[in-house]
Length: 395
Image 1 (cartoon, rainbow, N blue to C red):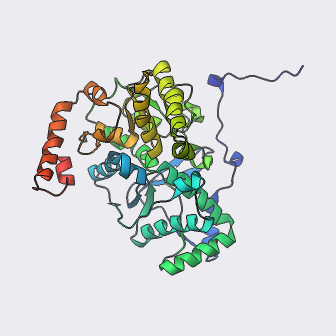
Image 2 (image 1 turned 90 degrees about the vertical axis):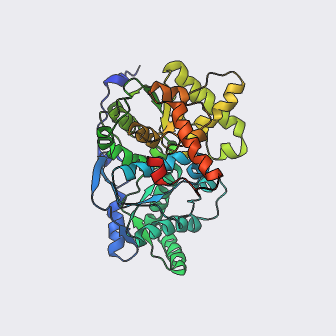
Image 3 (image 1 turned 180 degrees about the vertical axis):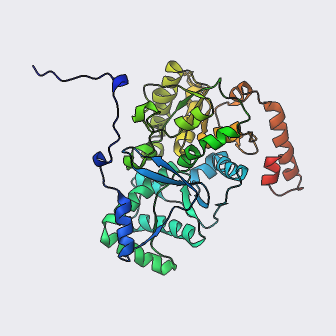
C-alpha cells in the first residue's frame, strides 16, 4: 500500500512562486515586440499601486488617468454598478475619462460560441485600447467578461504574428495604432487598491454586516496567474478581490462550500437554457449561502454575476425556495459606505431582490431616500430638467 502525506487544508501554506506560473510573464514579450516595432505598449500612468498576483508577480494598478471601459450589461441592467465607480472617482477628486466612443467588447458572443473570427475579436479590443491611448488615459475595464476576454486577446496577439499583421491592417484603415496595455486592469482591482482610502472616508458603520462573496469566473479562472491574491485572504488560496475590500470596511465575510461554482450565467446557458441558469444560481449559490452562512448581502464584481444572482431569485421565490439575499457589486458597497445615495447613485431600484431590509440594517432611512429620488424624477417628468446630474446625485 502506498502511503501519501496528508496535510489538512487549514494547515497548508501556499507558497508564492513565480516560476510555477502556467505561463511566462507576458510583459517581457510585450516590451520586446515594441522594440521590434510590432506594436506600442500603453504604460501604466503614475500614481499607481503595486499588488501581487497569484504566483507572486507584481501588477500595477493605476489610481487615476483611467479610461473607463463600461459594460453593456451594467448600463442596460444594473446602471448603479457603473455610476458607483464614477462616484468613487469623483469623491476622491481623481482624473478619469468617461468615453463616448467605446464599443462593446463582443465577448459575450465569443464565449457563447457565436463569434466571427479571431482578427475581428482582437480588432475590437485594440480599437478600444487605441481610443484610450489617443486621449492620454489608461483602460480600466468594468466588466469581468471583457477583462477575461481582453487578457486572452492580448495573449493571442503576443504569440501570433499573423494575427498581429491582420489586426494592424484593420487598425490602419481606422487610422489607429496597434497598442496594447502594459496591464489589463479590472475595476475591482482598483477598488482593492483604494480600499484603505475608502475606509478612511467611511461614514456608514458596516461592522455588524455579514457578506458572502462570489468571485467572478472570468476574473480568476481565465489567465489565472494575472488575478490578485494576498496571503492574508484565505492563505492566498483564493483571490483577494472583493473579500479584502469588504474586510477593510469592517464587514464579516462568511465562507460557503460552493464559492468556486459559476453564478449560473454561463454565457451560452443564459442564452439557450435560461431555466438551467436560474436553477443553478438559486440551488448551487443562493440557497447554499443561506443555509451555510445566512449573510445580509451577496457581493460580487461582474456584470453577469450581479444580474444572475439577483434576478434569478424571482423564479426561486415563485417556487418557495430559500432566497431573498440582496446582491450588489463591490463598487456599490464601497460607495454606500462613503455615503452615496442608494437610489440616485447606486440605483438599487434596478435590482429585483428586496434590498430595503439591508439598507435599514445600516441605519439608512429608506423612505426618505426614495422620496428624494422620486422628487428628482417628478422634476424630469414635469419637463423642468432633462436628466439627473452629478450635482443632483451628490447633494
